[in-house]
Structures are given as structure tokens and as C-alpha cells.
Amino acid sequence: MALTAEVIGMLAFTLLAFWGIATWSLVRTLRQEDRKVEILKHQDRMDTYSPESLAELREWIENNPNDPLADEARQQHNECVDALKHTDMHYYDWSSEEIDRLDRV
Amino acid sequence: MADVPTKTARAEWGTRFGFLMAMIGAMVGAGNIWRFPYVMGNNGGGAFVLAFLVLLFLLAVPGLMAEVALGRYTNKGVIGAFRDVVGRGGMVGLGVVVLLVNIALMSYYSPVIAWTLYYAVHSLLFTFTQPGFEAEPFMLGLFDNAALMIGLHTVVMGSIAAILALGIRRGVERIVVYAVPALVIALAVMTIRGLTLDGASEGIAFAFTIDWAFLTYSDTWIAALGQALFSTGLGWGIALTVGSYLREYDDVPLGGGVFTAIGESSIGILAALAIFPIVFAVGIEPDAGAGLAFVSLVEVFPEIPLGGLVAILFFVGFFLATFTSGLLITEVSVTTLAEETRFTRTQTVLGVCGGIWLLGLPSAYSVDILDYLDFVFGNWGLPLATLMIIGIIGWVMGPERLRLLAVNQNAGIHVGRWWNPVIKYVIPTVMLFIMAYFAWENFGTAEMIGGMLVLVLFPIIGYALMSVIEGRGEQPDTADLTGGDD
Image (cartoon, rainbow over all chains, first blue to last red; front, top):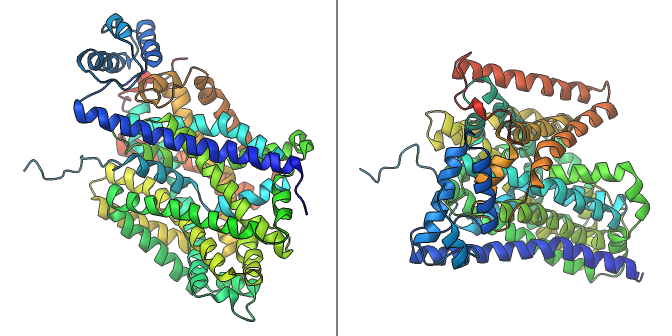
């Protein structure tokens, strides 16, 4: 029995959608791990948020200053800002201008 | 003295790969091997794959991100994590519900692991390719032999206890980093063997022919929903427990969400590719469950070249899939009870495994009891556990807080605000729908009555227990989180 083009196409799509994404995410996360290990060989801490995530965290803190978790959020925000300002190697894609504009909350 | 380990020193995964394999090892179980391929083939093939993929990304990926993030955020097992969110008091009992469901699940899953162990051993003895071997009497002989089943159940729980007693890094991680790749390799080799047989293409056609009409059938979506939620183990406390051992700079959403959900489903796809070409090449009708693994496939192996070796690959792989799930299901109770009591980890392991062994005796004794419990907890107990975990994240802690504080911290991918309504509204609604749907479908049956008892009694038991333990009427110390934030 010869397979139809439709079946072969579906098989290819399925392999790509499942094994393709699984392999991509596995390789990506392991490479990210290697990068973090490399950074931590040179310094004792590193940035913990991407520019977009840190901006969202800051916005939330400013909008919810009395939230029960606001202090914890401030601490996490400030730790990231301190790490960015006092370390040379950064994990996320931060520009010097972006780091200069950051301040603690 | 500073080097003396204390009860409060918490273990961590030794490597990122160890964490990832623990997640996959936990989630890949019997369902991926003996259920997914059949459900896929019988629900429109490619159409089912599309529905399944949509639901994985809509529900399982975000849900697993939330559960792993809660574990990482609290660095505690189920009960401790619930206490951190809801505060001290009876409401911590909602976490006890998750624990009770896990213990119940493992009590009847251990005999299933015992079946796969028995078949793995017999595959190594080349029993299935012996002249005159008959598959169905062999299977029924196992199921009807209570002493043998109880013995195998004892071996399984004893092995799990021995590994868990070694700890997270020296025990669980050491096993899963080899077992999961071994399972994948076994299925891959079996796939290659199957695809080289005459008539294998019929098996591929059965699994991957697209019947678009199936996308308009509610049954297709219900089947895909069940597979997406139950296969990924969302909300059972496993992802929370595994996530609680993450290290300081570890990512949650890419590894704990995307890779886990898609990776474990990929093994189901691989199982379909491994099984159906062989089954169709020999001309046997596809089946599901024990009928597929223990009768159809066993009848197939003697018919194909190198069948004895293929049987070893399949049954050893199958055993590894179920055994690693059993390890992590049991770890949920071990982690939280070791934290909540004064017992050491070893004492807790012995207590938990002994308790599960005792509770598992009826299921080891009778397949009917096992089937009953599987139906009750599969349809109502596990969705209840999911509702508890996703419920406290969505409605007590608030998904926005968790997203900002844990999901996106050190993350390998950015998770946007779209995530919040999925956690708060979509997943809880789906879980309520599932429980109501199965109650409607099985209205008045013994299974439905058992399910309703679980839904009512487990929360009451949990609430009462934690009210007594934590002090009735004491004000929750972090209850001001209540209400969420979005």
C-alpha cells in the first residue's frame, strides 16, 4: 500500500510539530544552561530578568505598591538592577543604554 | 559542625538535563504507550493530532508552567506550597487533597508497573517467541494469580523505596537520566524495525490519515482534551514537586512548560510509529490498553524477524516508562511529608511506600478493583487535584504575581499577559467541565458514585485534618493574598 501525499505530509508535520519543537526546546534550554554556568564562573551573580520582563515587574510594583508581595517584587527587581549595574557579563540581551536608564524601586 | 546536614537543607537537581528527564520520566507512562496511538488512530488520525496540539499549547503548556513555577517559588512540596499561598489553617487541606489523590493513584499504578515488569522479564527470557505460546491465557494467568501479582507489587514498591531513599540527586536523577533516553532509543529502534516490514505503510496510514470531519465531532475534542491533560500530568503535584528542586537560576517556562508538554507527547507519537507498522504488517487489528500491549503485540512478535529482540525493546521501554512515573508520583508524597513531619527522608520513604503497598493490595489482587479505581480517580480524582493546584494559583495567589515573580524570572522564553486568563479562567473551567461531563456520561453508576464521594470527602478530610493540625480558627498568616490581582 503506497502512502498518499496527504498522509506523508501529515506525518512530516507531526514529526516537526512534536519532535521538532521538543528538540528545539531541549537544545535551547541546555545551551542557556551552559551560558549561565559560563557567566557564573566569572561572577557570583547575574541578571535575572529580560528587559521586557523587568519592565513589566516594575510597572506592576508601581501600580500595586501596597500589594502583600510588593516588597518581594521590589527585592527581586532591585537584585536584577544591581546585578546588571555591577557585573560585566549579562545573560539577557541588555544594552548599555538600557542599563544606564535603570534604577532601583 | 557547619557541614552537618540539617532537615532544612533542601536538595536540588544536579543538572538541567536531570530536571528535564525527571519531568519527562514522570509524565510519560502507560497512557503514552498503550492509549495514545489507539486514540489517535480512531479519532481522525491527523485531525486528532491537530486538536491535541492546539489543546497542548492552550492548556498543558501554560498549566505546567504555573505548577512548576509554584514549586520553584515556594521551594516546598505540595502542602508547604499551599500553606505559603493560602496561609495556615484548614485551607491547607486543599493540598492534602492533592496528596490523597497521588497516594490513591500510585496504589493502583504500582500493579500496572508490576505487569510491565513481568512482561519485561519474560521478554528477556524470550517467552513470547517460544513455540506454542498463547498471549491471552498468559495475560489472564498473570491477572488471576493474586500471589504473583502481590509479589510483583511488593518488588515494585520495594524498588521505588530503595531509589527514593537515596534522595533526589543520587536516587531519582541517576535513574531518569538513563531511563528516559533508553525508552526513546528502544521505541526508535522498534520504529525502524516496524517500518522495514512489508505492509507497515498501512499502520502509518491508520495513524496519520487525516479525516477532517473528526474536527467537528465533540468526541474527538473530548479525547484530545483528556489526552492533553491526563498524559501531561497537569496539576497532580508532580510538576510542583519536581519544580521545587530547581536551582536558583533555573528557567521554568521553556523546560517545565514547552519541553515537558511537547516532549512527553512526542513519545506518544513515537509509540504510534513503533507499534502500528508492526501490528498492521502482521495483519492484527489495533487495540488499546492491556489488549494492545499484552495480547496484540505479544502475538505479533513471533511473526516478525528478530521479534524476540523487538519484544525486549518494547517491554523494557514500557517498564521504564511506567517505573519512572511511579518514582515521581511517589516522590510527591515523600517530599511533602518529609517536610511536614519530623521523620527523616528515609523514614518517610519507608512509611509512604509501605502505605502505598498496603493500599495497593486490593488492586494487585483484583484487576476489577484496579479498573474501578482507575476510572474513579482518572475521571474525578485527578481533575480535582488539578483544580486545587491551578485554583489556588488562579484565584488565591493570582497568576500575574506568579508570572512576574517566578515564571519570567531567569526564564528561557518570555511569557506574556495572555497567560493570566488561561490560568485563572480557562483551565479551571475545563476541569469543571470534565468532571461534570464524566458524571453525566456515567450517571448513577458505581463509578460515578465513587467519583462523587472522592469529590466530596477528600476536601472535607483535607480541611478537617489541617484544621486540627494547624489550629482551628487561627488566622491565616498570608491570607491577604486572597483575591488575586487581575
